[in-house]
Length: 141
Image: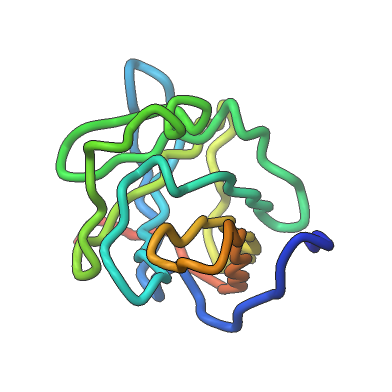
């Protein structure tokens, strides 16, 4: 996952936490815990794109919902959320809608998050943060 507009940054946005089976708006899927890879808190409008694949299969961006502090937003809504901030220490979730449940064992997640840093005064730069993790499904005890 690459693009000629910006450089890849080697800072993972996918947390090293188990995946959680969940439902959202009545749809089955799972949650992936993520962190803001920027060095400062940012408005959600700075999140330009998230690409994600699970076990080598790309996830349709329409099947991804961003959840922060109990509020959910589809990825295509993010550009209009300039007054909602993602604080640097807050974790968020990506709900991945999926009809077929993930099997037991480890799953490989790979992704790219594209962010714009509004604090840079020399121009508009898209920064690409890549991540690759092997995560298991959380099990009830």
